[in-house]
Image 1 (cartoon, rainbow, N blue to C red):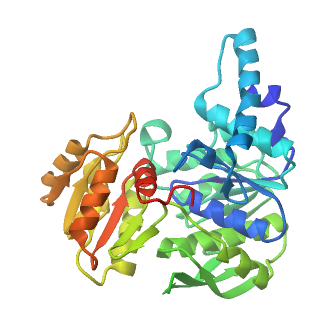
Image 2: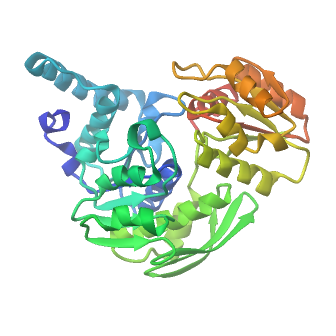
Image 3: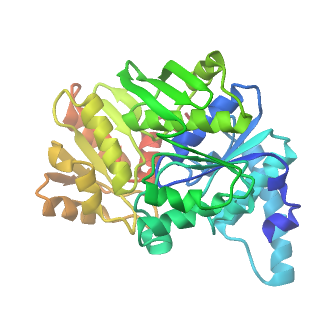
Length: 403
């Protein structure tokens, strides 16, 4: 109803629509950087925010100013008042943010919008849009109480972003899960490992070196300034998506220029070197395992790290700690973000105790980060993880807010 009363602004520009359990934010920012490198004006919508609510609506990967954000929201407020008066209903928070993004993009004549679903796909507020390119990063267990309980259930729910005219680009998926997407009517489908692939993926100073094969050819020796083997997979997916969007290969010079601008706040973001301090917003076991692999495999040559861990309901802190390989850490510092759905720091500590892991409790994220950095010493390593809300508070405490 909101979009219709706004004049369906989401139909005013082409849309690249992303779903998946993990990697949406990283892949979306890479896509935006690559499309921007072609000289187009790119809008972006994501959730939740990391530092402040403005982060949810971006232009060229930069959050809207307070003035622009207020203008975007004001339009929704006016329409919502009409809905309340005529229908005795009201839009919810996510619908309001989504509507604000769609409206602002239309009113400011952006060339293309890169839109992340909030949850699932079929019933997500963002799905009022028709995807020119529909993207699936991966499928893992998350939000099972809403879109589960099985991986196939989750895949079917997420497949709803595919429209008959969509070019579908699928990340790494088993055939059974891929079938949930390939069975839907679409314009064309590209699958990772079949139509495009990550050929090489190596650690480099300050990031990774990757080689990617797409239907348009081979892109060799690309530097991606982010950390973790999984980001090589995300980069390959982003490159394929952009080539699907333009319908042609990306020029290698443009590709290198675009990738060089990529920044990923709270995605294994390094905020200190002595000690090494990394912040990651992974909030489910699959994401936590990926963050742990990056820590131990790419940065794990020194002393065992210290983990600062907080999480949100309904996630099980014990499962997150197991996925984070907390038993290999020197210490877990249990904490909790300032959010209504956060798991109490003492409950995180109890989960660590049940796994035989040494743990300290610091209820406030900032205090937990300070304690961990002091305990680690100059030669140690600290990973702050378990929730984007924890990551956001840690970034603000460490002076990274707004990066």
